[in-house]
Amino acid sequence: MSNETNILPNVSAAGLKALADAVLAPKMHAKLDDLLARNADGTLAAEELKELDAIIEQIDELNLLKARAEYTLRQQDQSNGQ
Image (cartoon, rainbow, N blue to C red; front, side):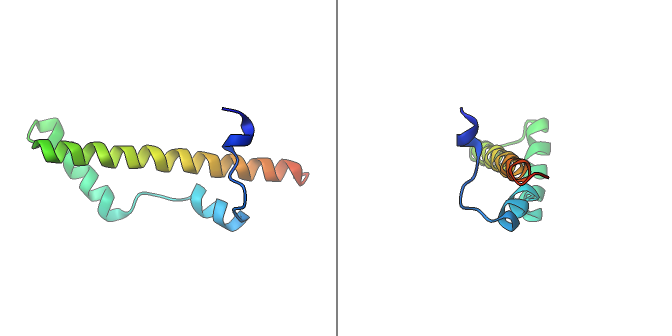
């Protein structure tokens, strides 16, 4: 992937900072903790395992978006001479 595809165009600096600082919602984090604990115990039903996988996929996507926002901010700072 080229550097240009990592940049988030047309997003304000405030929006980029908000994305870079984004965290998993507390309710979702609690659900994740519960599912992970029960998965470690081997007590998850098949549907709950799918739910755990979906949450982990969302976290992966959030982390990629955060990284792209941070990268874009750094590129903007460099182009502004900061």
